[in-house]
Amino acid sequence: MPGSPGREGSGALHSRTVKRAVLYGLLGGVLIVFLELNEYAHFVRFYRVEVYGGLLAVVFTALGLAFGLGWSRRREVVVVREVPVRREGPFVPAGERLRELGITEREHEILTLVAEGLSNREIGERLFISENTVKTHTSRLFGKLGVQRRVQAVQRGRELDLVP
Image (cartoon, rainbow, N blue to C red):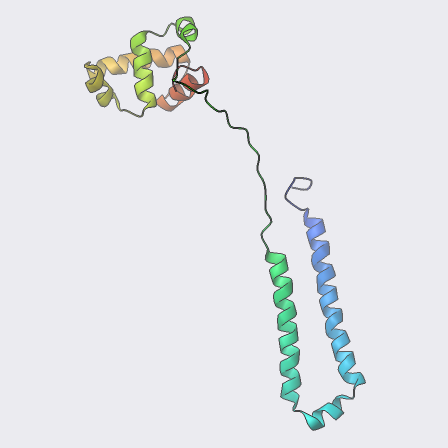
């Protein structure tokens, strides 16, 4: 996106690419003119043509590598994002919100266990209640929190400071 930090507009990138390509071409042209001015035939008598061809290849390869590495260098992008930090000490649920929403102690217990990632069967075993009772409590809890799924219930519980 143009104007975003860490990114350049495509027009500026295209312009820089064209400038570098023109510069690269001009350097090649200057090198050829230099060889012509120094009487290429004179050099050929003393040295073989392959040597000069090899030198030209090395020069252009070095220039190509330098430009290529410069263009492909990764740009560092710094992303700043605020992350809420929990206050120190043990977690204390917002009791006032529990009463406002009408969430019972058992429903809060189940919400806490759901936040720990336990299944209905595991919650039932831990609380010594049947799996159907856990389902009943979770469906009532979903209604009180205004959510449809377990993940949404945990997210909403964390937003309201009901679970850690």
